Image (cartoon, rainbow, N blue to C red; front, side, top):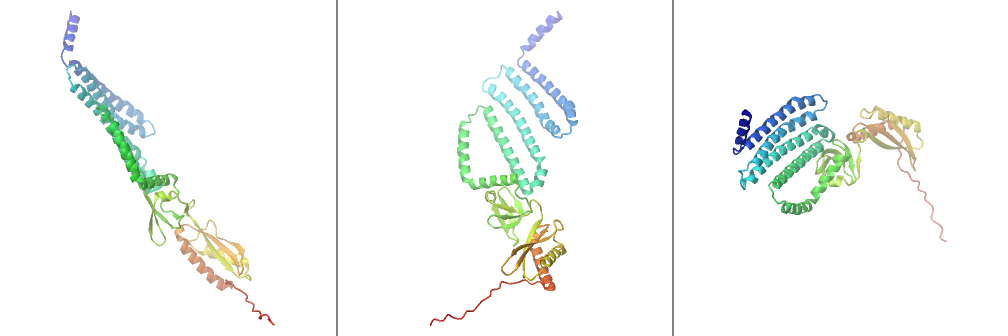
Length: 357
C-alpha cells in the first residue's frame, strides 16, 4: 500500500505545472556544483603537479565558464520542458539563455587571448624593442576585434537574423577601405616583414640604398626612424624599407672595420711604414685589440706606394673620430721618421719648335 501510495503521489506531483522543469533545473545546479568541486579539488591539484604554468591558467579561465554553462543548460532544458510557454516566449526565453552561454564563453575567449599575448610581451620586447611592443599591441587588438566580431555574428545567428546582407555590405566596405588605405596597408605589411626578418634592430648603424646612413632609433609598424651623424632624424615608410638594399654596419658583429688609405714615396721602406701604421692604430684606445690592426700594401701607383691600414672599433659611431685621430697621428709620425707623403708629379719636356724652312 505504501508503494502504491508513493507512486500515485508521484504521478500527482508530475501533473503540477512547472514542477518537472524545476526539478530538472535543480538537478543541473547540483551537477554544476559537482563540476565546480571536481575542477577545484582534482583538476587544479593535478595541474599544480606539472612544470608548466599554462595548464593552471587554462583551468582558471574555463573553471567558471564550465560551471555557468552546466547551470544555464539546466535552465534551457527546463524551459524546453515547460508546456505553458506560448509564442513568442517559447523562442525568446530559450534563445536568451543560449545567448548567455555564448556570452560566458565570449568573455573567457577574450581573457585567454589577453593572457596568451601578455605572456610573450617580455620576450618580444627584448628582441625587437618598440617594434615588438607595437606588434604585440596590434596583434592583441586584432584578436580582440576578431573575437568580438565572431561573438556578435554568432549571437545574431542564434537569434535567426539573416546575415547575408551584412556580409555583402562588409565585403563592399572592405574593398573600399582597402583601396583607400593602400599605402597604409603596404607600410603595415612592410613592418611585419621587418619584424619577422630582423634585418636590423634599434641601435644598429645602417646604410640605405639611397645613401642615408645613421643609427636606428625606432622601428614601428608604419615607419622606421634613423638618426644621421648630422643629428637629422629621417622617417622612412616600412614599405620602402622592405624593398631596398640595406647595409647593416653593426651586424653580424657590433664592431666596425675602418679602412685608411695612405700613400708614401717610392724611396720609403715598406716594412718601416707598415710598422708605423700598426703601432699608431694599437696606440689608440678606441681601436679594438681583437682582431689586431694590420697594414697591407695595395698598389704601386704612379707617384706613390699605396698602403691601407685596417683596424676595428667597437661602435660604428666612433668611425669618424677614430679615423681623424689615427690620420693625425700618422702624419706626425711620418714627419718624425722622415717618411714622405708624395703628391702627383709630372715631368714637362719643352721641345724647340720644328724648323719650317
